[in-house]
Length: 328
Image (cartoon, rainbow, N blue to C red; front, side, top):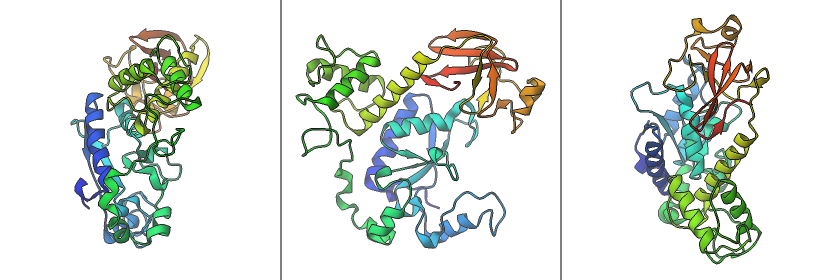
């Protein structure tokens, strides 16, 4: 199976490079795995867990052209920091998935049937290959249209100017106001006028600073990547403001979480045997991590920088970490 990103859709090639830089800026080192797959290679993968040993990892047969990999619009990534290619500690794959979505990619970790956490794709045709099959029939016919694809713009269509698909200085209206409200909510001043629905110099400065702070292209244009990232940051900030942990209250883990001896990532992560008897019941993988959906009782709350940690009977977990709420 190919690991050559040059065989991917031109726009996806650009996204791969952009994601690698963004991940590196956030302390996440990724490698690029499978890119384009042939029919035979997809059939081989489909047989795993069915006709051949292993777990089922795909529902897509090669002959059906149902895999995004066959159309050159998807690639897989892996952890490349020496701790193990698929080591999920520190919510590695979820964090990369979030960064990928912030620049307009789709993430297989959001799927409901078979979650594919190392899988990223161009979402222009949805989360499956159905639209491509209906429109082009075969990957070969689709690839013949790639000549000018690198210049295609797939940005949000919320602008009063039908000739373009982004917001810029000089624009007016509700969509500008919505952007301003989110910028202000995230701590970026749009000037004395505030959220007035006018994309002026104050709003442009706020957007440029937001782009710079979040590893985005500093162009002052409110396009797909900036919109996705701003909505994500605003949503997380809103959740954090609502997160008010109280001693004695019970909360639910939104993802699998490591348990540590003290509050902070510098402290040792506990082993399965270190957990309480009840905690061990909620550690299905026996790796010292409490399973997603586990209900925990808060014994103590502690702030570590901008993060919030709570002590459970089994130990400390990060309730709010790196701008995201993991315990609700």
